[in-house]
Image (cartoon, rainbow, N blue to C red; front, side, top):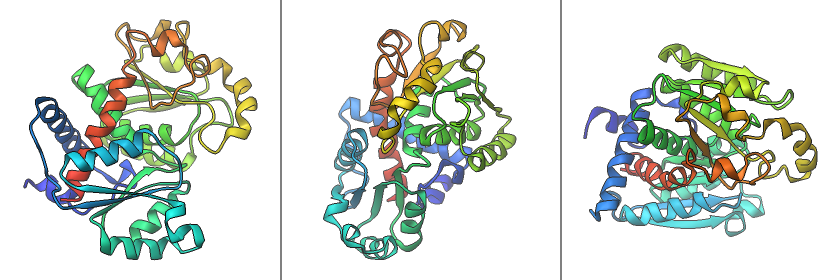
Length: 314
């Protein structure tokens, strides 16, 4: 086991801000290896006999299936636990849940609302905790995005990435991921929907160490000009359904369409974490077009998360 693998053993994955560029690269390298082995039918039961508890307070397609399948392919076992299945639903504190589960299982993945809950769970669990999504961050998604970009572009450092839309959890983690990997990120959001200022400050500190640039804008055309990669997400995230109509009006000028991307690099990639609403945040022409890699990106959730599991739960 090399030094970086030793550093990752037993760690929590709460935010990409907590990881070095070398550690993220090691995760991506293992994700590529596991993906290749899977395609070749080479077994890699690195977590034989290990168990992952998966706590879901938010519904999921990609997160649940990719983690559950990933543990199976690694030779381990995953337990699906909805809030209704746990005493959390009857008022047991997240700290006590962490203390108990951490003695039963080898790792815990949680998909929930408050970032504070993930951090508290990690504080009290003796088993590693993986952030499967919160309202603030979505680190596993960005590991898959980085893997996808590197597959198609052959590198990460020096690329220009554009985010268009809401300054949400995926945007926050993309800011950290790009900053850590030396990628220049332009974020275009409507006024009032900009990323969290504390996250932006932390990402800028990360960027200063790698030579990356983080630019916050309101003009989507300026953000996408010359972009190698363009990323967007739904305009109303889970829990914001009541804001859907109001957001439709605010975000209409931020639709990713052929007109907007006329100024992007000729060989740009289009990413979207899915589910997508064609005709809203992105047109069918773009998401179903030749630049789109959204289904490679979705597949890579499996491979990137298997790498995280194999390293943290080893």
